[in-house]
Amino acid sequence: MPGIVGLITDNPDQEAAKHQVSQMVQCMLHDPSYSHGTYFAPELGCYLGWLTHPGAYADCNPVVDDRGDIALVFSGEHFVHDADRAGHSTPRCLLKQYIDVGPRFVEQINGWFSGVIVDRRSQSVLLFNDRYGVGRVYYHQSNGAFTFASEAKSLLSVRPDSRSLDPQGLGQFLGFSTVFGECTLFSNVSRLPAASCWSVDRTSSVKKSQYFQPRTWAEQPLLEPEAFYTALRSTVSRILPSYFRASVPVGLSLTGGLDTRIVMAGMPSDAGAMKAYTYGGAYRDCYDVGVAREVAAACGRPHQVIPLGKDFFESFGTLAEQTVWLTDGCLDICGTHEIYYSRSARAFSPIRLTGNYGSEVLRSVSTFKYNAPPGQLFDPAAVRSTEEAGKVFAEIRSKHPVTFAAFEEIPTNLYGRLAAAQTALTLRSPYMDNDLVALMYQAPPHTRETNETSRRLIADLSPRLAAIATDMGYGGTAPAATAVFQRLHRYAQFKAEWYYNVGMPNWAARLDRALPLNLLEPLFLGSHKIDHYRLWFRDQLKPYICEVLSDDKSRSRPYLNRRSYEDLERAHLKGGRNCLNEINKVLTLELIQRLLLERDYGK
Image (cartoon, rainbow, N blue to C red; front, side):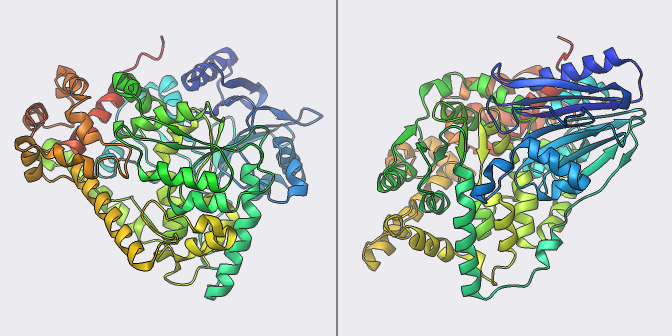
């Protein structure tokens, strides 16, 4: 994934430092097309590297002032909404802002990013990231060295003492499939907090500061309903053009829901040859595909479907390993299709505009939940860590709902899918724009609990799009009785599909084995979802799953209960039980062990 790496050290051996940075860059060079390079300031003990998609916003590193005193290494994007100032949003302009106002320049950056300022005038090195923490930076601090990187594997490659699982991180992963706060899966590796602007000197002394706190927005007064809606419509109309602005046509991953519909409704007239596409499933055209076709046609835009082909199943083992490797284990193997789709989407455009995060920011939808694995499968110490993770999460969940969505769920629970996509293309979402997130704190009570505001916004921005019902049957021009029936029918299909895949209880799984329940599949399978890992683990992917589960090394991991693990093997082999959650956790951890912790990084 594009990003930054760096080493700040008091070790005078420059060649050793350069070699370490080079190795860290190589660990992140996942595609030979990436632009990459290094920048050294040995008098400050500073050695930096970067990677970026060719032609991307940050494909100009390093940016250095005319006198060579100040350098900026940047990863990410910055969105300026004033069309007349669009040309003033470049990394060189960011460097000028730093020269003008100092470290406070980072407060004005709007987007996901991380970066480093090397200032020879003040003999300082500033490491910073965006206010949400989506521009992730991992760091390792030891006597005489401060090492950081956008991907944890880069640190593991040069810091062998980090190549073991962190107990706290393991507990959070088992309970939530992610790790939150400053904790990571890896020993002695931490995550840079959101909105950080840290000054690091060559002795690895760090002056930590945060330039933004969510309470700044949370303390704003609530608006009356009409005043809020007027502000929302104005804000959406003002910010959307920036996300279509690029040197190449942007690709919009269009769905049948509300959030990409808002983006299409507010699409500027000068959007150019914007390309729309939708991810398709393996069984049929889901509602996303059908509705997206209608939306694209109504806007006069071409539309294509990216199908899930047979090659996905044929190469699943390789894709699963790449998923875990590329995302540092932040995305489990049940997210493997994200890598597959993102690589296909790059053929349409190197920039993917998405409606992701709209439901979290606008409507309080959340998938960030505790999903405890069977306690008997794991070592008691791991189970205790999982229980502690639940307590930590309860504190996080108690925050302001917009703070929870924008500063906790999206940068943590949803980060793995974002990271997987970013390895292949640049991902953009207007729903994480600073102006929009700030405004949502002023929403009247209960506004974010329904989809009425989103539907009204679509109707005002584009009545022709409001006339098309969503994938769940909302909106459209059908008579009221017909619309109600349609919503109930699609909701029933949605729930049936969920229970048949992820949520199938074990008693039903036994029936699934004994009775030909697959005869019912044409009624719902693939109508809403494009991923069906319980079925795939049982059928197409069974040989791969059995191969990894039966490996002696997999069975002997210290966090596992050997007897329960062997019961899991037998249950998967014979069927009659929904083992999706356990298999997903166990196999993902096994790939983390093999690919990240036991890897010979010297080769």
